[in-house]
Image 1 (tube, one colour):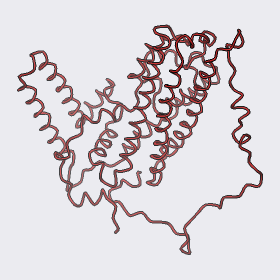
Image 2 (tube, rainbow, N blue to C red):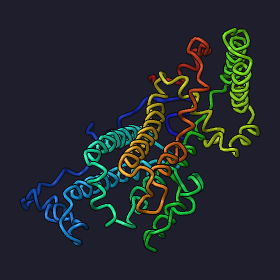
Image 3 (tube, rainbow, N blue to C red):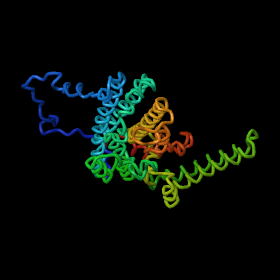
Length: 389
């Protein structure tokens, strides 16, 4: 069941506790022992955790301190991102997602996005190091590699990037160079539902708008067919296109039309899904599409923010991969990575291939102008808003 998105939406009622008093939690206790800043943050451990490999072999490489601190900060932010994602996953891993919970979910995902932006900016600090400065200690790090960041692997899996959706190199090497303990931890995580899978299930449970008074998808198909026919006419009558260009554009339009057709034919959709053209289930995609078409309706405000946040998280992760790849090329050129990968080439390939919420990006293909959408009947509009009975 999905609580808010039922056929009839009831007004939110504040629960009272007997004598017109709000229900509240226990009063926060006052600390009885003084809390000292350095002890609370364990600064002796944090600030003493930078051991330079270069010092073991001679003079310390000055830039190695920067290299260590930047990566330690990444790991701290990964820990916070996992803290937020695990709370979101726990919320969606229930039969019912309450309306009030969605507010917290969106807030936590927005926090993740801000952390991602900070991590992306942090790459610029690493780029203050020159390639030769990096080479002064780089060989001492072999075979250590970002491949061994368990938290980053946990982050990817939690979001929905499991082994089957990775590039071939990742499928073969994802668990290489790990301890048995870390390998077991990640394999166990792979067996649990990811945020992508849970959001897919949540969207699939939402009722599509089809009543005796109104069938949105009938209107939508008619408007979509008219839009695609107009596009075909525009291409066919464009004298500026060469014969090859026109043929190519008509071919791409036909592929788009096939994707539209799949929205109304689940068998066709599953065929395209098996070809990795879609990853969301048929019902989930239709629900997400309807939410985006009518995002201004009160009932869809939080779901729209959720979809937008997941899209932004995927975008920020892609930006991080790209900037990381560019930094590695700047530092190493075409040298192999310390972990045995092809370095820059491998990282660049993961930028586009290891995407998670690509369906939310591609959904813009199916969006129609507001002017082409049907006017919602009053009885339907009431069901999409909040009102007192």
